[in-house]
Image (tube, rainbow, N blue to C red; front, top):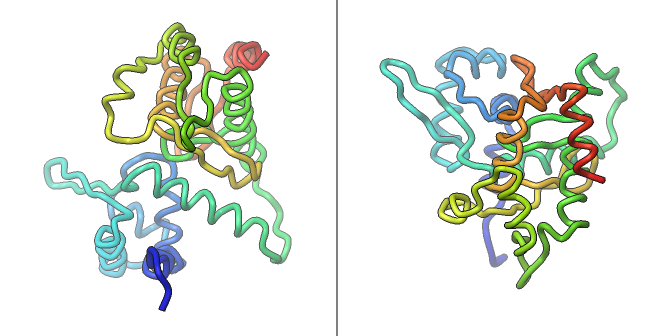
Amino acid sequence: MTSGADISRIASLMGDPARANMLTLLMSGQALTAGELAKAAGVAAPTASGHLAKLMEGGLLVVEKQGRHRYFRLAGSGVACAIESLMRLAAEAPQARVRMGPKDPQLRRARVCYDHLAGELGVALFNWLEATRLIAFQAGEMSVTRKGKRELRDFGIDIDALQLAKRPICKICLDWSERRSHLAGSLGAGLLARMFELKWARRIDGTRVVKFTPIGEAKLMALFG
């Protein structure tokens, strides 16, 4: 008998193809209806309802009610990071080569991973934050340094508000396309939200792609030094 957490239950929930499609679609960070998720999974509505119930029972999804409608979303960034890691493992596994779609280069460049920036630019942002000591490992955990608190406030990030949130400020998420780390947690979410606020970038409707404007990408690159 093994000790520790039982990963088989969560793995079996994620391993079903229909449920995997639903979870992957929800990586956009948007809340979707059962009908939208059923279409993505390629199953009938009653079958989708059964899958969604299992995912909620397993703690992978939460539901929000607005009037007569129910919207499903990932239970948190921890779930998103787990899915991102599985996507990386799937990409590394031996399989028949498939032709990448037209949006694939854009997804690799910059995309949403639940609520934070992933892809080439997400990894570059994490590397810059760590190299300039705005974030660092302290007592075995990644956290914001004193220098980081000063400079991030100047960038418009409310560090005090992030510290009051229930979720971790800094969380490392392994990027599936780059196979290196990007930043999740409330700071990762706050940085992406700030970039949207500054109109450096925008989401492409119906996708996870984050499209930077020429000015926005230039400012981001200047930030990286």
